[in-house]
Image (cartoon, rainbow over all chains, first blue to last red; front, top):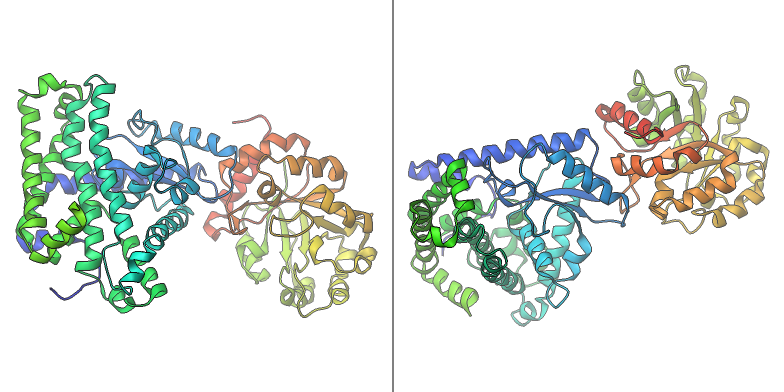
Length: 365
Length: 231
C-alpha cells in the first residue's frame, strides 16, 4: 500500500497532464465554459437579489460537473433549508425567467427547475418515501453538484445539508462500524445507495425508451455509458478511498466513535466539492495507474468533443433507436463508451490486488 | 418616499462609531444607534454629544436586549438623554422586568415584536400586556421577526391592525434558521409589498448584516419593498 495522502485536494487532472504530457482540450474547454456560465448566472442572481436566506441555488448536470457545452441544459434547484415560505415559489419562477437567457431549461422529469426541501433529502433515505426524484437529487448533491459559490449565503446552506446527509449515511452504519471497532472501512450504507442509484439510472433508461417511444434514446444511451457511469464510478472511488487510501486525518481518528464519524464526514464532504472526473483521476493516481487514467480522460475528452459539436449533438438527440444501430456517429460514440468501460475494468480489476478485492467485495456482492 | 437607514450594530458589531463611519456618505437617511449589548450603552451615551448626526432625518437608539450585569433601572437612567432629544428608544419586551422603569419615557419607548426564539412579544396577544403596562409606548415593527414567525405576514397584519397607529419605525432584514439577520432578497420584497399599503409611512431601519460595499444595494432593495405599484 502506498503512503496515505490527503484526499480531494489540488488539481489531479493538471497533475496527470504534467506527468504524462497529455492534454485534453475538450475537458479544459468545457470546464472553462462551465465556470464562466456559473459566474454569469451567479452575477444575475446576486444583482437581482433572488436568493432568500436559508436557500441556495444549486446546479446539477454538465454545468455542475464542469462539462458544460453550448447545448447543455441548465439544471438547477432552489434548495431550501429553513422555514417553508410561500414566496419561495415566486423566487423559483423569477429564477426560471432569469435563467431563460442562458440556455435550455431543465429536462422534463421534474427533478430540476423547482424547489427542494432539505427535509426530504435528509430524512427520506430508503423506504417507500424515498422517491426516484428524491434519490436522484440526494445522490447528485453528493456526487456531481457544485453550487455557484458567488451567490451570497449559498455555500453555507449547501454544506449544511450535505453534512446532514453524510451524517445520516454514517450513523446508520453504526452497527457495522461498532462491530469492527471503528476501524477504517468503506462507508457501506452510502456505497449501497450509490450502487442503487446507478442501477436505477440504468433501469430508468429502459423505462424512458418505452415511455417516450424511443425519442432521445441515442443521446441518453451515450450519456449512460459515459457521464452517468462516471458519476457512479466517482462515488465508488470516493467510498473505496476511505478504506484503501485513507488520508492522515482519518487514520488518526480510527478507533473512536465520535472522532471517526467526524473525520469520515470531512473526507466525504471534500469529495462532494469536486467534479467526478477529478475524483476518478486522483483515485487512479493513488494506485500509480497514470496510463489507465489517461485512457479514461482520453475517451471522456472525445465524448465531450462530440457533445460540444452542435451538429453531432443534434443528430444524437434526434436519432431513433432504429437509426442508431447503423449510424456512424452513434457507433463512434458507442466505441468511445466501450473503451471507457474497458479502462474502468482495467483500473478496478487489473491494477492492484487490494483494489480488485475491495471492488469485488463492496461493488459486486 | 420612505426614510431608510441602518442599525450601526448590523454594520459594525459592538462599535457604533465604526458603524456610523461606514454609513457616512451613503444614501442612508436614518440611523439606529445600537447598544444591543449592555456593555455598549455607557460608551454610546457618553459619546452622544460628540456625534454629528446632521445628515440623518431620523435617529433612534436600541436599548440592550439582555441584562446580565446592569440593573434595569440603571439602563433606564442611562437612556434618559434620549428623552430631551426625542429619540425613540427601541426596547425588547422580554428585556423588561419592571415596566415602572420605563413609564417616564412615555411615547419615546418603542416596543419591538420578537423573533420565534423569544418566549413573548411575538404576536399581538403577547405584546398586549406590555402595551397595557406602558400605555403611551409606541411600536417598532420588525418585519423580519414577524415574517419568521409567520411567512404569510398574517401576524404582522394583526400587529398593524391593533397597534398600527403607534408605529414609529420598522426593522427590516431577512432571518436565517439561526435567527441571524441576513441580507434582503426579492422574496422579502414580494412579501412586504403584500402588506405595504397597510403600513403607515415611517422610518425603516435595516438590520441586514452586510459588508460596507453592499450598503447601497441593500438600501435600494429595501426601498423596493415599499413600492406598491409592482415591478
